[in-house]
Image 1 (spheres, rainbow, N blue to C red):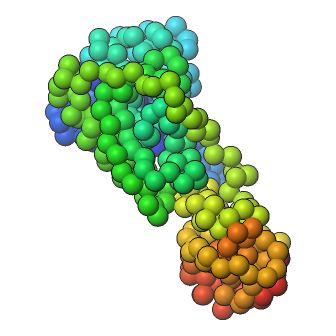
Image 2 (image 1 turned 180 degrees about the horizontal axis):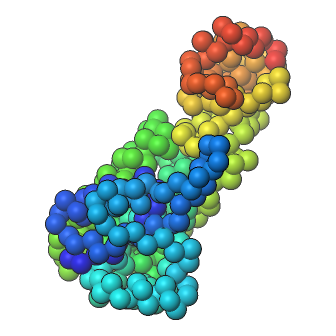
Length: 303
């Protein structure tokens, strides 16, 4: 098929690769404009999709918006059979959605209608969902409201957001290829009206660990914020990121957020948490044991 691809982060790259490997003609790969980098000089950095598409010799338009008549005319001129969208990050106006002959299909990282919106993977982990998945959805003007053609499911388990997103990205790529190989063989199923939840974008403030809740909730936050923005606590005026932690189902004396031993066991509102993989500001990733050898945090420290 003649396809316009639209995606931005790493999550979208497996779908682009799968479409190319399946022999489809990718006439363009839309992506968000390059963003300033984090290093000195803050030179603009192309998105993962832009880098991959350019390596494949595919043209990469990077409009700031698709709402202008000019942008919509450029999109329509590509004469696509279908638009394939995976974490693009820009709203698609009706004119864009209707331009391809077979409409636009989206790879969405949840089991709709649960977790419509920007951060379905992180929200599923934070909520303690036992299962999540990925779906191929026919796009409408509403926020992830369109009918679903195909789903793949997976247990959440103890996966981090990075691990779960990578798994769903591959599953979504495979599902999209299956659908496009027989697009009329996957009738769209409307989403039910019950069970709708919204996955709001992760606010950086949510990454600060709240020890007043349960240890289970704290550990979920650690996994949901890994790799970015990274869950953290503050001690002696310094931030320490927590990349992995274990839950201890014990009740300890002391208030929530207080260390109860010299091994960085932290009392929570219910139970306790013990970080296992950490990172001090400006330092490399290390085990908690290694951190404590050079940066002791004694029992009774309030975090």
